[in-house]
Amino acid sequence: FSVKANGWNDLLVEVSLPQFEVRGLKGWGFNVKHAVLDLSDSRNAPNIQFPKDYSEVLIRGERNLWRGFYAKEISVMLPKGIENTKTSDKRVQFGTKDLILDDQGVSGTFFGEDILKIGEGSAGKWAFTIADVSISLSRNSLTGGKIGGDIAVPIFEKPMDYAGYIQQDGYGLEVGLNSTYKTPVFLGEMKLDRNSSVAIDVKDGQVYPSANLSGKLSIVGKISQKEGEEQP
Image (cartoon, rainbow, N blue to C red; front, side, top):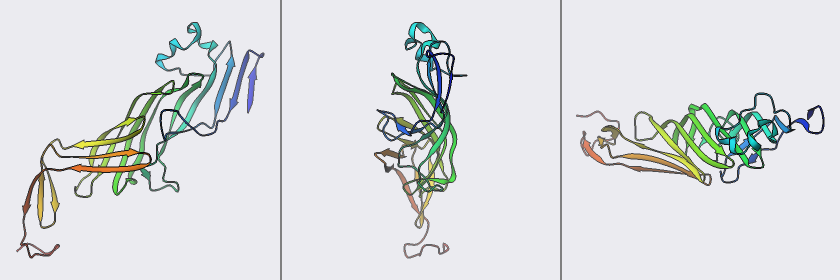
């Protein structure tokens, strides 16, 4: 580590921190390779960004009196469940910035884009992408979170866009059809109604996919016809 100081009340110490998990946000990992420990009464780490609601934490509103760790760049790891099939440990992670760690807990808004591309992600047996993800923490409390991308359900010909949720005990998504949808099935075609939906919930490292499908099934071949044969 390195120290920058003009006196005992003016210490800025560059440190690295071990990977940690935030209490109340199960399974999310935070990796900080370079952080500044601010013990100064007269200045802060260069370019520090405090959360918008941090005015009530700062002593008399004085930024320079704040003490704690500030990390400009960090890596955030999602809980087990959705996997990156291209990495050895299968974990999904993204780089982001501006983490505050002090006696109030962890704070910051952490956002990433293009986390899992086509062919990289899976949720159980369903292909999965993550186009964007964000979580907002205020003093160890989750104040916001969202995840988006597309999901390929085996019975559908094309992937579907989704907008998912992030909660303290898990994350997931539900996709409702916004129009009727046709999907091929054995010797026929199923026309799904708008009230059909598919969903994924991830809790305790396990993936729980589900589907609620309703519609009409049309048979377009003979009952004795084998799959792959041309229609008469």
